[in-house]
Length: 438
Image (cartoon, rainbow, N blue to C red):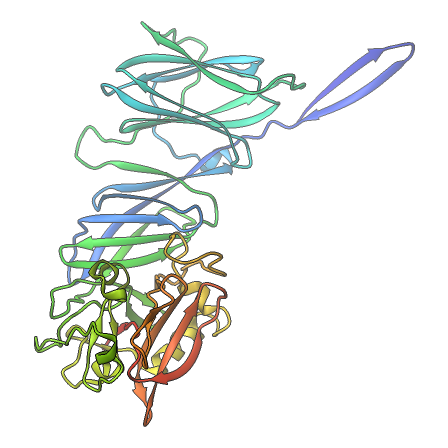
């Protein structure tokens, strides 16, 4: 703790006691690596989605994801340093210079400055040529800041301390130009290198705030597995790869929720497991009189089926030829109940199942977090009595495998609440289908 005493005279003496705490603040680094088990032990690629910030990136499964967390102690800092970035003077009063090296030809370079809470204060971006460049930083209030520079495949990080006790003007970061050389005396550097010179592995940087929820989708050949995580440490994410391939050779992402393994996408098949075709019925008059199994795309548009999965009447669900991939079955009413209870009950489970970082759900998409990885989309429905389509974007309906004399059970999610509604409906209706691993 640094105590500064200032005395002012204006007819009498007034004593001001100013207390300024200089906190050792850096970015903590969580490094996430990846492995495979089950049907494959290799990971070809990983897509990571930050479901809190709604950002995403995709990279090789051999790469390491580096999450930079602001606001922690110096002892937790874990970065690779070199002498290619310099800030002087630091601590600064008024302004400072920032010099760094662009190592690749014509790189898009972004500078971001954060305060101690992790709030972004400044950002600027330039297309810079290979070589050393300099910026000026001015107008900062007193405090501790973190500067992050991303240039091509390399990034830099450094702490900046401002001792401006009075903030007189707007903070500004300004590009000065390219410089021939750098005076390395009286400078500070703190650099994170994102590519190893010894191999083809890279470190992929992603901004992360404590508590953010990440959705990892690991891919290995035909297999895709989802892994949900709120990182709190460096660790390895292991994807359990499971075959989920239907008779049309559609390969589905899967996710484990509690003790169950679910498809993380709606079914799209046009065939039963034995390769027999499921009739595609487009005419409304024909649809509302069907008793054999049938499917359709929403509004009879194939692209809608690609996005949301296809809609099936319950007769296709109940057909003994089985519409799910080998080793899978249509989810039962009791399995839906196990799922919703695991996610906290019918009043909140729907929010934990709905995709949240998408425009496919209508606003307000109440309660949506997708923290389960179920990734529900609003595929809409087809009427049992008129064959009309309705509610795409607003609602999603999924058949259960049980029925009564005229009706079958289903689950229902809405954009307007976080509930999972359980009800029964006419078997001739068109709903989505999810399969569960045997």
